[in-house]
Image 1: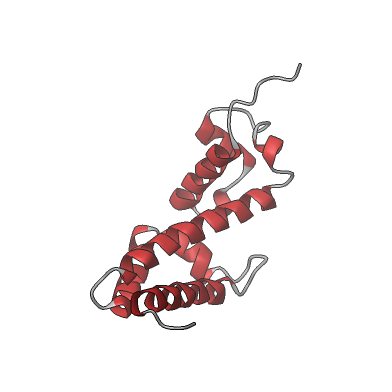
Image 2: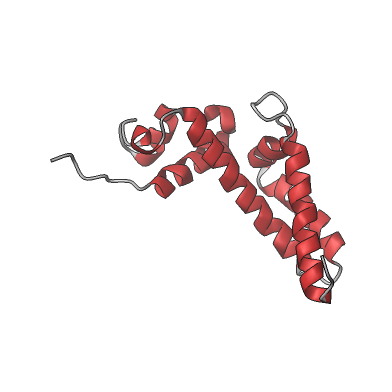
Length: 136
């Protein structure tokens, strides 16, 4: 009988996200994430075949976090002003994730900044459509 899995995929991604927030995406290594979890590197490769897959999951988690900032901005009295205020807040509070989403041009997706800004635009469009009952 194989040993019981001690960590779920989400916990591994959360640990990798923690490493990325503190040290940047380049610091997300199997050893660094395992150290954060207090285990060997083996559990990481239970869910991820490569570190690139884990880094992709961190990118998605960073985008989800950024999306929450944008959504908070959309709740402000002037939504577009709120979006940009929260964009700057994200840059200040999450500098390593901001670099990952908006300043990383050397990775596998050099258009990540454009995609992140497009995500902001889509969230604003969806929210304003919902608020003002406009047809998309």
